[in-house]
Amino acid sequence: MPYEHTDDSVVVIIGSGAGGGTLANALCQKGIDVVLLEAGKQESIGTFVNDEWASFEQLAWRDKRTTSGSWRIARDFPNLPAWTCKTVGGTTTHWAGASLRLRAHEFMARTVYGDIDGAEMLDWPLNLAELEPFYRRAEDRMGVTRTNDIPGLPGNNNFRVFYNGAKRIGYRDCHTGRMAINSEPRDGRASCRQLGFCFQGCKTGAKWSTLYTEIPAAAATGKLELRRQCHAARIEHDPQGRATGVVYFDSDGNEQRQRARIVCVAGNAIETPRLLLLSESSRFPDGLANSSGEVGRNYQRHTTGSVFAAFDDPVHMYRGTTMAGIITEESGHQPGRGFAGGYELETVALGLPLLASFVDPGGWGESFTSIIDDYANMAGLWIVGEDLPQSTNRVTLNRDTTDELGLPVANVHYDDHANDIAMRKHAYAQGRALYESIGAKRVIETPPYPSTHNLGTCRMSEDPLRGVVNKWGQAHDIPNLFISDGSQFTTSAAVNPTLTIVALALRQADLLALKMAQREL
Image 1 (cartoon, rainbow, N blue to C red):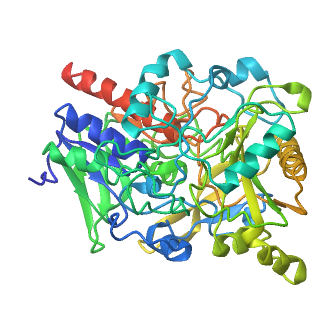
Image 2: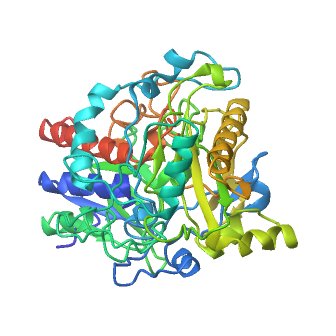
Image 3: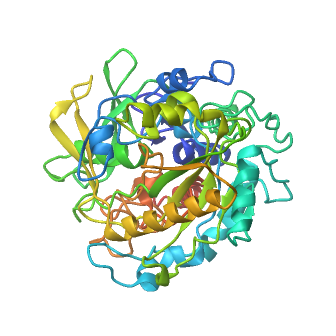
């Protein structure tokens, strides 16, 4: 049964991706009533398309955003700072599946790395030991390979090239990764059929997505109402400063108001701070949960880039799993390399449309077309490194530009820190050495793409003056407001964030259920 808009006993969750979808299911399994607001439409395994551009049109968040800062994205893709999704399941419909735990030192960046000029270094208010049981639950729920006795995925040609180069230059820890992609049938979902182009929606359902795992499981409890094409516009509060509900626009563009006992925001690290800033009031003139002034600040996207290499013989990198290959040995803190933190190297493949868009943005002429001509003979890897939090890297409201609902759009400002630049330079050199060691005739260093890892804009902190939420994702200012996505990340770490987002959501669900039972929320 649908919940009444006046029902103030429900938990309202905004966003149905890794954080919101997981949280919704975890709460529903505990018997808690949930209204899940999703701005996008609902697709399915049957409607997904194995075509990069068509999939982008189908799944991507294409509402206008603006950019500023010195990063190349502001020049190359000024209205696409991030590649996120506007669809049921959120960006779990568009991700590679890499599912890695943060390491112990990555929770203690301030302690381990020390103060770094120009960076807002801070330790997480929790540690690996506290999150470890939830990592185990998340890995089991998602079916992460190389955990819980789940075998790894097979290596495709792109991985074989990657592996051989890794061994040539002295790397030892290289394998097909920990992936939330079924290597064998599990939980009613098929095993990977190695169709390729894994960033987009998985046609076999082998890749974990809240679209066809968490959300159907939540619905089966009878405790979930999923409202599609419902775009949250602001969160309201009472005179005491407690959240009372969410105002949103429905699929017909009509303004609606859903009352709430608790509000959880999981719109990703761009839309989440945007919503809090849009929720300004006389009591919170700088935006909701923003007495610290930290909402939107410390935006992180990882230090990324790609290295592609052309060989004399065909590789067909696009065949098989896109990112089932990883080298972990650069991920530790080794300051002798000239930078703090570390990075992973992961296999990556792009189809021709995306390669043409991203390999050399703005490229033209023979130098560009020759890259495309070598497509069948190319191998590729992606850099995932820890970028440092900077207060000036932030999401703000661009009040000069509005979306189709008349709301100010998000502006994303980003400048690379000198540490990020040094890390990327080192990673490019290692990628080049890897491919040249096995006979690459040409190596191309590709700049970062529009981000898929968006983190840190409502970060956790023990000190309310240095962040937005506590170790549970609970707003310092508003006890019944929670952040449930990658916005919580205190620092970015050197791993893909989805597993940690899911683990944090499971942990948050346990706290909410306890506090609700005790009538503290």
